[in-house]
Length: 211
Figure 1 (cartoon, one colour):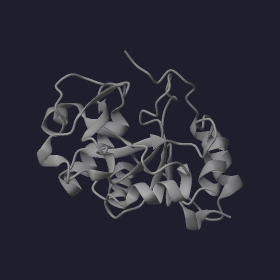
Figure 2 (cartoon, one colour; figure 1 turned 90 degrees about the vertical axis):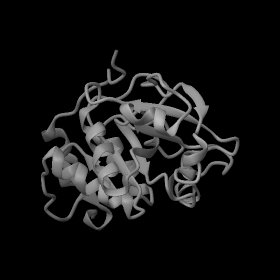
Figure 3 (cartoon, one colour; figure 1 turned 180 degrees about the vertical axis):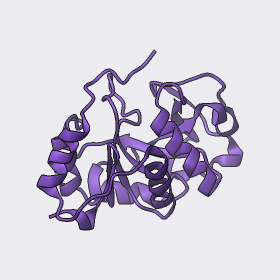
Figure 4 (spheres, helix red, strand yellow; figure 1 turned 180 degrees about the horizontal axis):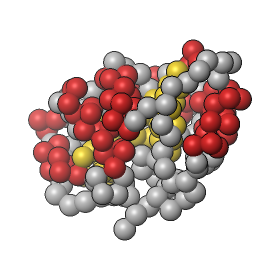
Protein backbone atom coordinates (compact mmCIF):
# COMPACT_ATOMS: atom_id res chain seq x y z
CA UNK A 1 0.00 0.00 0.00
CA UNK A 2 3.02 2.30 0.29
CA UNK A 3 6.23 2.32 -1.82
CA UNK A 4 8.16 4.59 0.56
CA UNK A 5 9.77 1.74 2.48
CA UNK A 6 13.35 3.04 2.55
CA UNK A 7 15.10 4.85 5.39
CA UNK A 8 13.85 8.21 6.65
CA UNK A 9 16.69 10.61 7.47
CA UNK A 10 16.37 12.91 10.44
CA UNK A 11 16.78 16.66 10.38
CA UNK A 12 20.13 16.55 12.20
CA UNK A 13 21.50 14.24 9.48
CA UNK A 14 20.37 16.69 6.80
CA UNK A 15 21.71 19.69 8.73
CA UNK A 16 25.13 18.01 8.95
CA UNK A 17 25.33 17.93 5.14
CA UNK A 18 24.09 21.52 4.90
CA UNK A 19 26.97 22.58 7.16
CA UNK A 20 29.41 20.67 4.92
CA UNK A 21 28.14 21.94 1.57
CA UNK A 22 26.57 25.35 2.16
CA UNK A 23 28.21 28.70 2.85
CA UNK A 24 25.12 30.63 3.91
CA UNK A 25 22.61 30.17 6.68
CA UNK A 26 19.85 28.07 5.17
CA UNK A 27 16.33 28.74 6.42
CA UNK A 28 14.01 26.05 7.72
CA UNK A 29 10.50 26.07 6.21
CA UNK A 30 7.14 24.59 7.02
CA UNK A 31 5.75 22.12 4.49
CA UNK A 32 3.29 24.77 3.32
CA UNK A 33 6.01 27.38 2.70
CA UNK A 34 8.46 24.89 1.19
CA UNK A 35 5.98 23.50 -1.31
CA UNK A 36 4.69 26.96 -2.21
CA UNK A 37 8.22 28.22 -2.93
CA UNK A 38 9.18 25.10 -4.89
CA UNK A 39 5.97 25.23 -6.93
CA UNK A 40 6.71 28.86 -7.83
CA UNK A 41 10.29 28.02 -8.86
CA UNK A 42 9.05 25.14 -11.01
CA UNK A 43 6.47 27.38 -12.68
CA UNK A 44 9.31 29.76 -13.62
CA UNK A 45 11.26 27.03 -15.39
CA UNK A 46 13.59 25.88 -12.61
CA UNK A 47 14.57 22.22 -12.23
CA UNK A 48 14.40 21.10 -8.60
CA UNK A 49 16.01 18.14 -6.86
CA UNK A 50 13.45 16.74 -4.40
CA UNK A 51 14.46 14.62 -1.38
CA UNK A 52 11.65 13.91 1.08
CA UNK A 53 10.76 11.11 3.47
CA UNK A 54 11.59 7.45 3.02
CA UNK A 55 13.05 6.36 -0.31
CA UNK A 56 11.01 4.42 -2.84
CA UNK A 57 11.02 0.65 -3.11
CA UNK A 58 11.10 -0.47 -6.73
CA UNK A 59 12.38 0.80 -10.08
CA UNK A 60 10.70 4.22 -10.22
CA UNK A 61 11.20 7.63 -8.62
CA UNK A 62 7.86 8.36 -6.97
CA UNK A 63 8.27 11.79 -5.47
CA UNK A 64 10.72 10.95 -2.68
CA UNK A 65 14.01 10.97 -4.62
CA UNK A 66 13.16 12.92 -7.79
CA UNK A 67 14.18 15.67 -10.17
CA UNK A 68 11.09 17.76 -10.89
CA UNK A 69 10.22 20.20 -13.68
CA UNK A 70 7.34 22.04 -15.36
CA UNK A 71 5.62 19.72 -17.89
CA UNK A 72 4.27 22.68 -19.88
CA UNK A 73 7.69 23.46 -21.34
CA UNK A 74 8.65 21.04 -24.12
CA UNK A 75 12.21 22.43 -24.09
CA UNK A 76 12.67 21.36 -20.46
CA UNK A 77 13.37 17.79 -21.64
CA UNK A 78 16.46 18.89 -23.54
CA UNK A 79 17.55 20.98 -20.57
CA UNK A 80 17.21 18.02 -18.21
CA UNK A 81 19.18 15.80 -20.57
CA UNK A 82 21.90 18.43 -20.86
CA UNK A 83 22.19 19.10 -17.13
CA UNK A 84 21.60 15.71 -15.54
CA UNK A 85 20.34 12.75 -17.53
CA UNK A 86 22.65 12.82 -20.57
CA UNK A 87 20.49 10.30 -22.41
CA UNK A 88 18.78 9.98 -25.80
CA UNK A 89 16.18 12.67 -26.49
CA UNK A 90 13.58 10.15 -27.67
CA UNK A 91 13.32 8.60 -24.20
CA UNK A 92 10.21 9.99 -22.47
CA UNK A 93 9.85 11.58 -19.05
CA UNK A 94 6.92 10.61 -16.86
CA UNK A 95 4.19 12.71 -15.21
CA UNK A 96 3.10 12.77 -11.59
CA UNK A 97 -0.52 13.87 -11.28
CA UNK A 98 -2.97 14.46 -8.45
CA UNK A 99 -4.97 11.27 -8.03
CA UNK A 100 -8.31 13.08 -8.27
CA UNK A 101 -7.34 14.81 -11.55
CA UNK A 102 -5.94 11.84 -13.47
CA UNK A 103 -9.04 11.19 -15.58
CA UNK A 104 -9.12 14.81 -16.79
CA UNK A 105 -5.64 14.61 -18.30
CA UNK A 106 -5.27 10.94 -19.21
CA UNK A 107 -7.48 8.27 -20.78
CA UNK A 108 -7.40 6.51 -17.48
CA UNK A 109 -9.53 6.27 -14.32
CA UNK A 110 -7.65 3.95 -11.98
CA UNK A 111 -4.83 4.63 -9.51
CA UNK A 112 -1.21 4.18 -10.61
CA UNK A 113 0.89 4.81 -7.48
CA UNK A 114 3.88 2.82 -8.79
CA UNK A 115 4.16 4.53 -12.20
CA UNK A 116 3.84 1.21 -14.02
CA UNK A 117 0.92 1.82 -16.40
CA UNK A 118 1.12 3.53 -19.78
CA UNK A 119 -1.97 5.29 -21.12
CA UNK A 120 -2.99 7.91 -23.66
CA UNK A 121 -2.79 11.61 -22.83
CA UNK A 122 -6.15 13.19 -23.60
CA UNK A 123 -5.95 15.05 -26.91
CA UNK A 124 -7.02 18.36 -25.34
CA UNK A 125 -4.01 18.28 -23.02
CA UNK A 126 -1.19 16.99 -25.25
CA UNK A 127 -0.09 20.51 -26.06
CA UNK A 128 -0.49 21.66 -22.46
CA UNK A 129 1.86 19.04 -20.96
CA UNK A 130 4.21 18.31 -23.90
CA UNK A 131 7.26 17.52 -21.75
CA UNK A 132 5.58 14.37 -20.40
CA UNK A 133 3.73 13.36 -23.58
CA UNK A 134 5.61 10.80 -25.66
CA UNK A 135 5.75 11.04 -29.45
CA UNK A 136 2.96 8.44 -29.68
CA UNK A 137 0.70 10.47 -27.37
CA UNK A 138 1.16 8.28 -24.32
CA UNK A 139 2.55 8.73 -20.80
CA UNK A 140 3.60 6.42 -17.96
CA UNK A 141 1.41 7.88 -15.24
CA UNK A 142 2.14 8.25 -11.54
CA UNK A 143 -0.92 9.14 -9.44
CA UNK A 144 -0.28 10.90 -6.12
CA UNK A 145 -2.60 10.70 -3.12
CA UNK A 146 -2.67 12.86 -0.02
CA UNK A 147 -2.71 9.80 2.22
CA UNK A 148 0.35 8.08 0.76
CA UNK A 149 2.66 11.07 0.08
CA UNK A 150 1.22 14.20 1.73
CA UNK A 151 4.11 16.61 1.02
CA UNK A 152 4.41 15.67 -2.66
CA UNK A 153 0.63 15.89 -2.95
CA UNK A 154 0.79 19.38 -1.41
CA UNK A 155 3.47 20.40 -3.91
CA UNK A 156 1.25 19.30 -6.82
CA UNK A 157 -1.68 21.20 -5.29
CA UNK A 158 0.46 24.33 -4.99
CA UNK A 159 1.66 23.96 -8.58
CA UNK A 160 -1.94 23.59 -9.72
CA UNK A 161 -2.92 26.77 -7.87
CA UNK A 162 -0.18 28.70 -9.69
CA UNK A 163 -0.49 27.19 -13.18
CA UNK A 164 -3.86 25.43 -13.35
CA UNK A 165 -2.00 22.18 -14.11
CA UNK A 166 -1.91 19.40 -11.45
CA UNK A 167 0.99 17.63 -13.18
CA UNK A 168 4.79 17.66 -12.75
CA UNK A 169 7.55 16.07 -14.78
CA UNK A 170 9.16 13.54 -12.44
CA UNK A 171 12.41 11.70 -13.13
CA UNK A 172 14.82 9.89 -10.82
CA UNK A 173 17.29 11.84 -8.69
CA UNK A 174 20.53 10.50 -10.14
CA UNK A 175 23.13 11.32 -12.76
CA UNK A 176 24.07 8.10 -14.57
CA UNK A 177 24.35 6.39 -11.20
CA UNK A 178 22.06 4.57 -8.77
CA UNK A 179 19.25 6.76 -7.45
CA UNK A 180 20.35 8.82 -4.46
CA UNK A 181 19.58 7.39 -1.04
CA UNK A 182 21.23 9.45 1.72
CA UNK A 183 21.46 13.21 2.33
CA UNK A 184 25.16 12.93 1.47
CA UNK A 185 24.28 11.33 -1.89
CA UNK A 186 21.74 14.09 -2.49
CA UNK A 187 24.18 16.93 -1.93
CA UNK A 188 26.92 15.31 -4.04
CA UNK A 189 24.55 14.78 -6.97
CA UNK A 190 23.00 18.22 -6.61
CA UNK A 191 26.41 19.90 -6.59
CA UNK A 192 27.58 18.03 -9.70
CA UNK A 193 24.32 18.64 -11.58
CA UNK A 194 23.17 21.83 -13.24
CA UNK A 195 19.80 21.95 -11.50
CA UNK A 196 18.67 25.10 -9.70
CA UNK A 197 17.59 23.97 -6.23
CA UNK A 198 17.51 21.11 -3.75
CA UNK A 199 14.47 20.69 -1.50
CA UNK A 200 15.64 18.34 1.24
CA UNK A 201 13.57 17.87 4.37
CA UNK A 202 12.43 21.31 5.56
CA UNK A 203 15.24 23.12 3.71
CA UNK A 204 15.46 24.69 0.27
CA UNK A 205 19.02 24.98 -1.03
CA UNK A 206 19.76 27.27 -3.99
CA UNK A 207 22.85 26.77 -6.10
CA UNK A 208 24.22 30.11 -4.87
CA UNK A 209 24.14 28.70 -1.31
CA UNK A 210 26.79 26.07 -2.12
CA UNK A 211 30.40 26.53 -1.11
